[in-house]
Amino acid sequence: MPNLLFKNITLMISDMMDQVGLDDTQHGKRVAFMATQCARYVSFEHFDQVDIFTAALLHDIGVSCSQEHELLVTILDWEKAQTHCLDGAVRMKSLPFYAPYADAIYYHHTHWQTLADEQQVSQDSKSLANLIFLVDRVDALLFQYLQQNPDDEAIHARNTIQQNIQSLPGYFAPELVEAFLKASAVDAFWFQLDAAHIPRYMNSQTLDRSIELSPQDVEAVAFILAAAIDAKSPFTAEHSTLVGELAYFLAQQFGLPDSRCQQLKLAGYLHDIGKLHIPDSILEKEGPLTEKETIAMRRHGFEARDILQQVEHFSEIADWACHHHEFLDGSGYPYQLTAEQIPTETRILTIADIFQALAQKRPYRDSMTQQQVISVLDKLGAEGKVDTIILELVHQHANACWQLANGISAQSPIKSDAIQAK
Image (cartoon, rainbow, N blue to C red):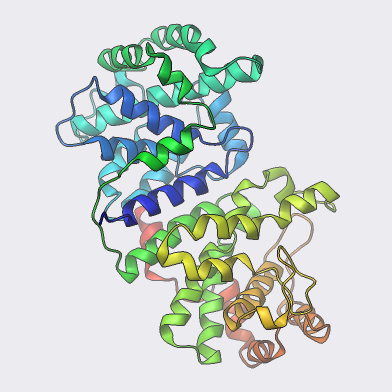
């Protein structure tokens, strides 16, 4: 039986990244398809098709905000593109099975005339980085073409895009341009880029890599995703990681087994993963939300479950993460659960999320004091919305909760390593 763990984790991260592109979803998936097709005409010494597919699929793992994604697909050579390349390389290095692709991710917006002379990078990584750059720009050109010609299909853009790619001297290695021209001469190359066909292509990939995840690796995966979530807006910086730390602490005080506490920390890291699909303008809006904007916000728990349940290691915590806006009286969302349907872990996560969010400055209000935060929670407890037993633990450990919510306590090892690598 094939080991599906590598495939499931990789596709889960890809689906998370799709959330960032509001008008341009499946970007990474299209880039992965095009890269593997072009690679049939290029020789790699150490990278095989799985390597090429995986690196291309996850090349934009450093992109978190929808505005940045929009600029990357609408400006052919954006001057600030390197920022997400650096962030992406740092995130890839934190997992041993993705680390070999870090250089390709770091240099995937570097012109070939510069990259060719880079002495510290292997030839395979240079070629892979430049191949990703090439097909990434093909997809950007395709997006621009279809925006201007919404009644056309991808194949109608073939001649225009081929001419554009050939008119960029110094951007791409000549052999890669030639490989693209050969691959894209086939009609099926363009038909496959249709939104209905790309998911089938993804599922058809074996991604035959046998891996095992240690507890540290599982936490590293969760932290990579949390870093992407928290980078979406300056107003939510470190929100997910701090909610995870606070939820872990409250679970310990409640007396849950250590394995359960660890899982709850991961749920905290991942609870807002669905927010990647919310426009930056909504998350950073200073005034009240419209009805349409409110509905967009209320989707994020649902989106979180849809993404996380793909990987067995996250399947149980998917429900905890998804339900963090549910209230015991049935007035929460997105499932309007009632008390008997909400487990202890979700109740802890809900209080940790509210506590940290209130302690953090947001565009529509300033950060609250410790006493103000606890007063809001007390009101919710009196209204029957949150668990008063867990709330009592907050009262007993108010200072510790405050420090954790504000990142004053010691950093977790993974977080420290990530910062050091950066």
